Length: 167
Image (tube, rainbow, N blue to C red; front, side):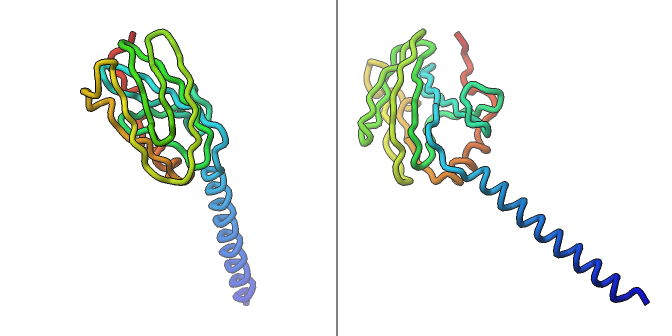
């Protein structure tokens, strides 16, 4: 005798659950795909390699959820990227010629460079250790990614520093 009431209850429960899941997906997707305004990225030269430290989910550099990579500099589309360059051993030059970025990294100093990330594309990232372009670890790419792709890339990077030798 309760059959119509039971069917109504289960239908309401399924509809409510579906709406709840859709709302959750909308807000999670929105939280991870908000465009970046300004973003700071640390660039460290060490043992003839450029290492990159990115802000984590909180989008704050030098916090517990930072991510680490090397070789390829990833930046989110449309962001004002502030690079903080330093070195643990030698003086390095970092260049992104197509974006007119030419800056130095030196021990015990922090140099700042700025690049406006435009549409998604890949640029050459050239580095030298003041003795020429002989070190493959200093040659890489800067990859401008859509916000969602950048957020996904960050989840694949290491949660621990990749620099083996600390000062």
